[in-house]
Length: 177
Image (cartoon, rainbow, N blue to C red; front, side):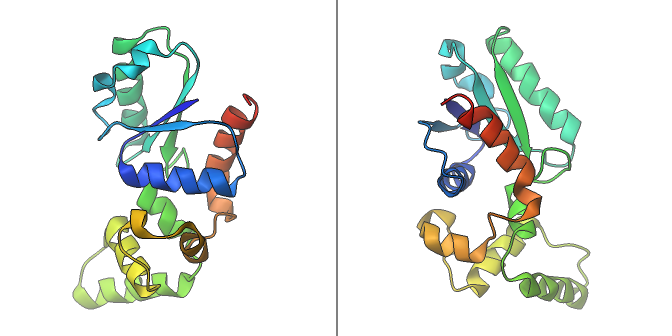
């Protein structure tokens, strides 16, 4: 089954998470390079079976979902697909929002809140927090450079917050093995 994602960090995360879930189904994760580039992936035209799309909800969940549906309908009106939007398929946010919720060193998050108050900034971006968190855990700030066992030490893939993604993947991948 093909899974379309926005960026390389999404692909890396999903590969690790699929291994964590022990989903052995052959999947191909295709990076489309941004939420507005589905239309440029002519692979969707050729897919006769169901495929998955996992993108960020960003600042507006419904707009993000409608954007995806609109692009796909222009390519293949008969396409069979399921959509999941990071962080949890109901709230606004992105992959970094999900990462921030499943950290294993939760005390570091409190440090970010103190830092925000200290510099007078209302909120740091989740991406900034993720990079600072990885640095604090003595890991590379480039997700693709981190070994999977190190990533599992920094993030709790069994956390309740990730359950919607787990359910989505299990329903769509395990059942079709």
